[in-house]
Image (cartoon, rainbow, N blue to C red; front, top):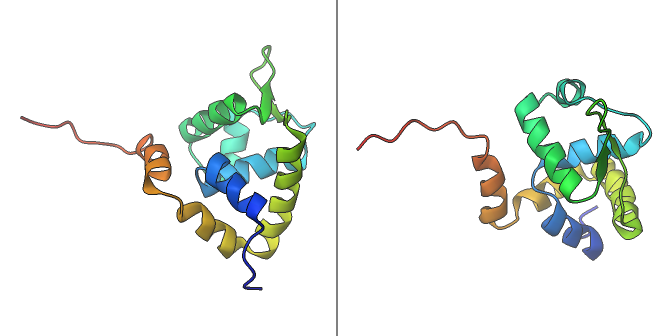
Length: 129
């Protein structure tokens, strides 16, 4: 079980996944690709704030992993890249079987990407001169 992760999965994580919450969001949406999710419902299901959920959904939409229904703002999974979708299918199985390895891979990324994402949610005190 200590085999390294497949290189395509490692590359995908390095370039497309910013956090465990983002991965879980993406996998949940993919699992039932025809289901439409509201931000509030999705946030509740994932135990994250609605604000964090909105930011992640906006990012996943820009990366072309989901589509937004313009009438009701609900989202559903729709990956425009067949190769990325196949890697996500493999990643879903690996995440079930080797969760610690996947989480470690996500958090072993250079600090800049992960830190930038985390900083978006950090509450800061006003700086005083």
